Length: 460
Image (cartoon, rainbow, N blue to C red; front, side):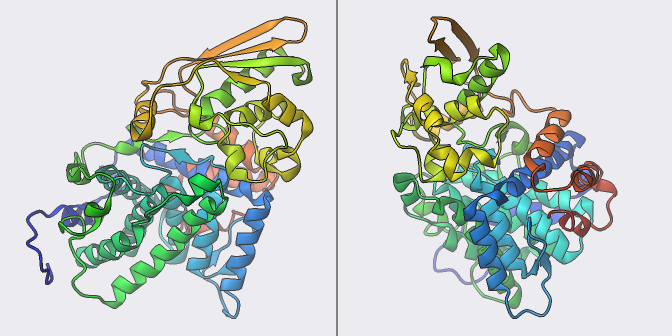
């Protein structure tokens, strides 16, 4: 412990560092390793799928520019193939991870947009094995989740605590340097406002890229040497003081014994906000089961809906984020495009007169009466009420389906086969079939892979 004006009476930061340092592949249960593999496959798939959108083409261009003048890049730019700096690759991949809002979700945010991107890129740069990559992914999820549960902040700020432990593990940092790096990370993670929530700006997606990019610089700073930044989660005036609430006992709760990535992380089945998932699932099931023409729909009744995600537009959307967060839009989109993909957020789709018309036929019969963090906590724990969707046709015919939750929820997790089929669907316009199958095979057998950098070479 370095100099500190305050008396430090706990050692939770140190315990987190020791957990990262000491975690071994052999100690991780097979079911957790399997989930890590599936999360890797899913996150790569949704990231590459997003490359169709202008926002991702923009961030790829920015990443290439950041590396201009470099004789030799060290990391592969996903969906592009250029060799760029570690930081530039992380910027692009982090942004891609959240662009379609299709990654994962927990009570606290979207860890995979940091954990998986950092693990794949870090393993490429540092020439790590598949076992190293998988171990780092587990460390990232477990530390992220505990830090995020200990104090409420902006969800993007939490992603620093997904990226940091992953790269600490891959770099084989000593615990003192880890401790200091956490100190830098806590200082950079405190984001006081969710302006993107108020404006529905697509800047939200770039923020995930910024966190991934910045984390590499933080770690390099810690490795070069700083002093007296230890114990940031223990200092009474540091990180947790600035959170909306603070419950420091979460930082080390059942650390090394319970795997929160199994019980508290859901995988999104649709390219939409977490509160929209079940409604998109219902819409797609209805049109697939009853084979009706969406043009012939008179109205769609949802019971109950989610008030702060139930909004319309008479002209369509300009912002991908706003479309992803609209239950009526995604309901209409799932009926016209029941195979999900980036097409949901092409500019012409978000302005499609047919989708706009159908969106405005979606009516709410009551709303779920839950608010704030408790709302998503109850969602993860499976406490939300059953949702019903009734489609009334112009000829008076009615079709109804109901669900408590969607595939990918911790209580309704996708099977390995479903993850694989989703990956094929997500990447069919981005990768050749040969590359798709090579990625699937590599991820499924990562524990046997001596050089995980081979994975990055397939991501374009």
